[in-house]
Amino acid sequence: MQAFLEKIDDYLQAFVARREQALTLEVTHEEELSVSSDAAVAYVQISSQTYTIYLVYDDLCSSLPKRVTILQNSQLAPPPLASGQQVAFVYSSSSKEATTATPSKSAKRTRIVAHEHLFLEHPLATAYSYFLDELK
Image 1 (tube, rainbow, N blue to C red):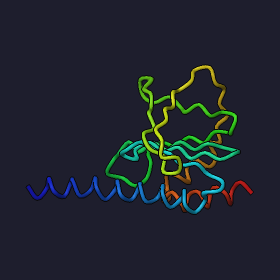
Image 2 (cartoon, rainbow, N blue to C red):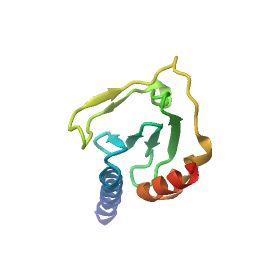
Image 3 (cartoon, rainbow, N blue to C red):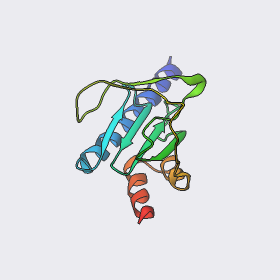
Image 4 (cartoon, helix red, strand yellow):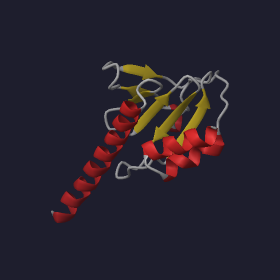
């Protein structure tokens, strides 16, 4: 029973950390960013006028994503997930609306791979600050 409760605690702590990181980023950069996620905060999209960042948290016990894709703004179609899955965004704290994003096979994408490691190694707000510094 104790092992079960510890595992539930791991999931809950990671969920709260992901949710708070996304909310903090959205509040501190509300003029320039739109942050959306699914209910479990397992898939997060961060959009600005110049780029879009997709974070996928495959391990729901982790507060760091396992996959990151940064695309130039003109390339707004989200990256395909395993087996062509589609992602439905069910929550955006700024708009309070549900939206849906569908991977597009026809969209040409220009990835900014050089900065993706930042989001794999650091909490979201810190990674975003480093990302902005590296863009300068």
